[in-house]
Image 1 (cartoon, rainbow, N blue to C red):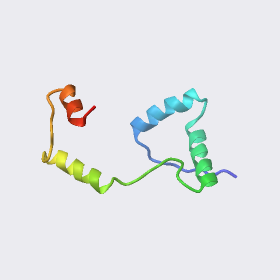
Image 2: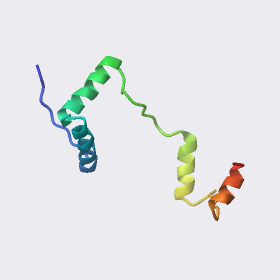
Image 3: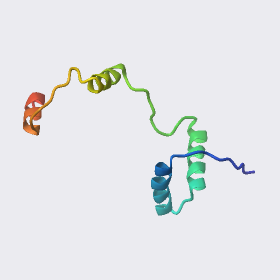
Image 4: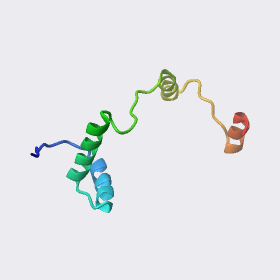
Length: 84
């Protein structure tokens, strides 16, 4: 038995994803069913999702508030700082 449902998706994501599905000869529904089958088989989301680390949150805050930011005049200066 099949169930019909509806989902709200971002237009841009839908359009770009649909191009990929079309290349595989899949419909949007096929892709959703494939995702759901993978979730059911593996008992997990089939890709990594995570929350940002405290360090990343701190760095984002620094950038947004323009504090503790180091800038370089060119890539050579950056590479020298990184010792590469």
